[in-house]
Image 1 (cartoon, rainbow, N blue to C red):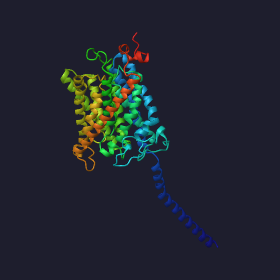
Image 2 (cartoon, helix red, strand yellow):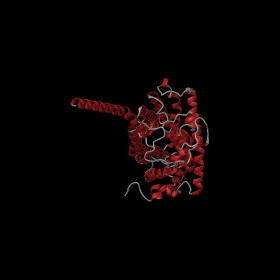
Image 3 (cartoon, rainbow, N blue to C red):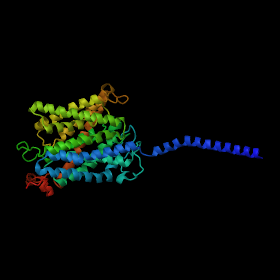
Length: 459
């Protein structure tokens, strides 16, 4: 009897052992499958953390970076007006982006790879008011929450019209600036953003095959051309070329430029939309181009005027930042060195000789730096993307010649789109509220005439 009981007990233990072994095997095989299923619907924490950081860095570029950079360049009676413009645009464009801007820029309804449709130029209205985007919504094909991408792209939409403000600083009505910026962001910026970055079926990225990693066309050429049109239509400042108009605080300008340099790592490296090797290379080439352009501008100015200036070296740095922007995801260190060198020299010419020769009053060189620098960077992207020159490599079937042609075609479209539509919008604003302040208000300064405040207590 005892032997029988022992035998039964042994059999039970054997059964239990087999069941336990089976459970362990199922767990070993099943847990990874469950984990993979969870990973497929959950954001990558590393990518998300980097994109949150990049978003904050790009916002930092406008407030306080660009605000201080521009604020230091104007005369003392206009410093507060520039700070106010940057701050107000940050709020206004945020609201506009949520209402319709993001949808017009990134909604992909109606797009087909390799085919030109209406939606190759502008997005649909399927995500107005961010409809359908919630806490758990992942960016399509990505590893981050779409809410993070919405905010990241919002910071680009904020800084672009703020760049234009440098062209008409010290003379445009605040009300006119706001109306122009709203219309321009909807009619000009959002469609160009869609053409470049919306994916399969987009005009620049898919149909033409142009490379614009972080905004050469979308931000800089776009803003630069609009700035040139605005500077011409608004007219020259009273006393321009006959009265000295030195920056009131180069200290603020240098501080602002330094903030732009740091924030630009979020601008370029963040455009990888992941914490990976592409982001690392984008960060490296951004540093190289910026430093090279700053030194190039400094030496050119030193040779021409006998002394290097703080204003020159920081403006050169911004030129390098602008030029590497479209190339930052495509080129290597060699390309970054050349792009920085060329942009420093060419933008110096654009902001000095070209402006003086043509006679337009681009107050803070928005066109000379952003427009010209963006064109230089976009064209050279087509050259230095080649692996033989240290780049990531040309797309299948592309040569340096065909890639440069694609870059040039995208530039021409951007210039035409931004130039024509900006002209129309400015004319509409001028016919409704008027573009320019009265002469006595301009002489008094926009701080008092537009805001009834002073940037400094002068008593």
